Length: 190
Image 1 (tube, one colour):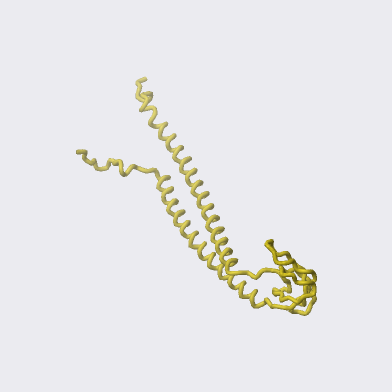
Image 2: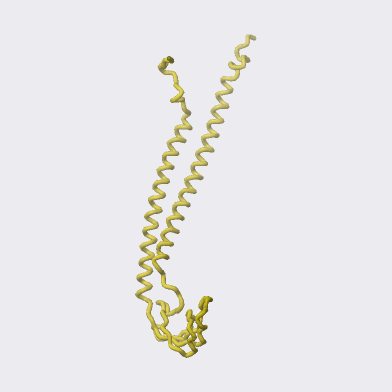
């Protein structure tokens, strides 16, 4: 049964260079920075989602429904997608406007139709939805996470390169001291 000699390193606890200890400490700090990046991404996503919901409320408050008149005949109902039909309407401020709305159903030109107008008086723009708020939250979280992780990976690669260069220099210095004794050139009598 092998006995442990005090002061002698064992296989489970090899001596490590100072540069490797520094690398280990920096690795733990970068890991912590990765966790912080994920937390920041979650807060960013929550903020983007709240901003999206606020945009929905603002847009809903500014939208109004007005009566417009079709300027062209609407296409009949069919299997294809509806095509935009020109419509004339008066916006909230009282200005005459012309826009395009999707209309189908054999409607003739001159037929009155309800038109939803946004806060700027434009017709045909889709209102923001909860899905848009979710998308902006996911996009913000993804951007922060990927950007942060990219920076952390680049930092880790820089640390690894510096440690390898430091170790190579140290090994070379140590070999210059050991090699003459090891090869026997340093012990030969003159």
